[in-house]
Image 1 (tube, rainbow, N blue to C red):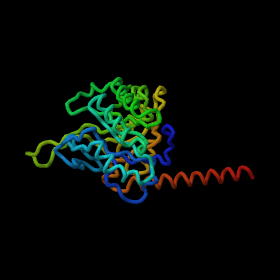
Image 2 (image 1 turned 180 degrees about the horizontal axis):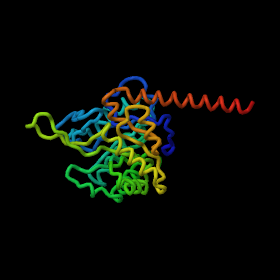
Image 3 (image 1 turned 90 degrees about the vertical axis):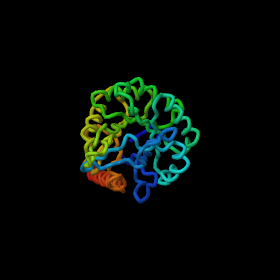
Image 4 (image 1 turned 135 degrees about the vertical axis):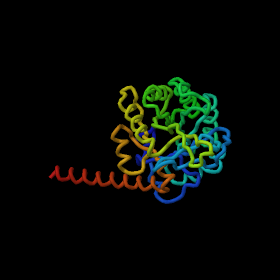
Length: 293
């Protein structure tokens, strides 16, 4: 997959990477995307607000604590860079000035280290979905592009809205995005077994998200106006799931929930993909040799 001047060595990428990522195989990935950070730390009720609410389905708490960009650069980025693959910082903000501010900070403090950013488009806690418009996506993308410059990779991660995702994607494309990611989490609610406990509110990821994410990728790939490469993301646990995303039009995938449930999954799938590619190349080479005889 080509992202600007960077060629990803593998279509398997890690998303929401653990700050303490450790283990072999991650050097085979196409890229590493960090957990989403904000300019200022966002206080929250939960330090690690992730619950497994069904088989291979997670609920990511809305009021989870969020690290800020400064802590990322100073403490966590060196660990992710040691694998030697492109690292993109996932960022979000409540408005265009916020996106501009965090992009300017990353350019100044880590511009020579990171490959670019992922612009995570999501509703604020009090916002309505209708407030995310193609114009907002275009303006947010453009603000980040202007700060980071023409060479940086900008991946725009869009909400899981199949009916509206084409328009949002066109906004990202007009704003200067390098690629699209479909999609971020789907709003959900989980009721604990204790009837007196408060409902858990957050975003669904994993198995429950995959059919929606596949439809989102399909919608983007079917639109001839959209010229950007596409990351498929949501509920990837096997090589067959990777293939499903590629079949509907994705160029690469991001894995997050699968890695959380099974540390090392992303590295394993990347190795499988690399081996498949090598085997295919050998078969093609043999076929060419036979044809020349």
